[in-house]
Picture (cartoon, rainbow, N blue to C red):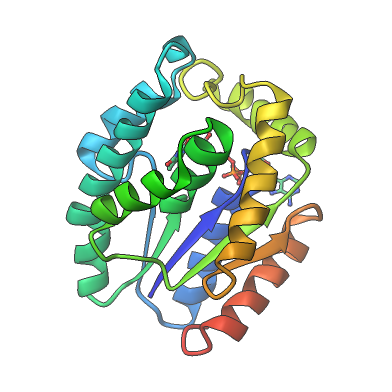
Length: 213
Ligand code: T5A
């Protein structure tokens, strides 16, 4: 099983994915947790390039190819082997981030992005994708506070530095994309406390992947 989490910055993806891993492991599942960008050795170097605030001069196309390179390497070296080994793979962001950020956010052609994603994922698509939905002002506040507490404001703050209107487009983009892919992508309200949000995540897993939880 391959499950991905999506959403704007600070919606609680990292928090919820860790909770889901603990929950599944307590039920005897072998779980592998990973993320994009940065789920492979080379990907960790790409992540630094992609997220550092100093790289605000990346063109939209350069940014796109770096994310696709990260994904192709991640799928080949990490996601596919882990799935083949029988593990449940939980991934913090995947191909839908490219559609939403580079497509709805940067304005690149969605059909082109779909085709390039097909090349990068090489047939490895999630069984379920959970979009955590939150007001961008709340998400940005959470993410910015977390980055400054972790000392990552420079190293990982390039997207947090985008204008609020960009983040609003991203949120709307996720909702639009989820509506176009109803079978695979489910939306969970992420505006309440972590326990309540996890209750929603569990309910989605239980109803859409009943064999898993
Ligand atoms: N990107 C990525 C693209 O443009 N294209 C692509 O193809 C891909 C793959 C990645 C960036 O790259 C872009 C999108 C992103 O901008 P990232 O550092 O991986 O950047 O950042 P995010 O995935 O956005 O993750 P964040 O770490 O910013 O946010 P999370 O993981 O959603 O949130 P989390 O769990 O770290 O929580 C943030 C803070 O809020 C608290 C947490 O304790 C933490 O302090 N929190 C809550 N507070 C109150 N109530 C709750 N329910 C809370 N849940 C968590």
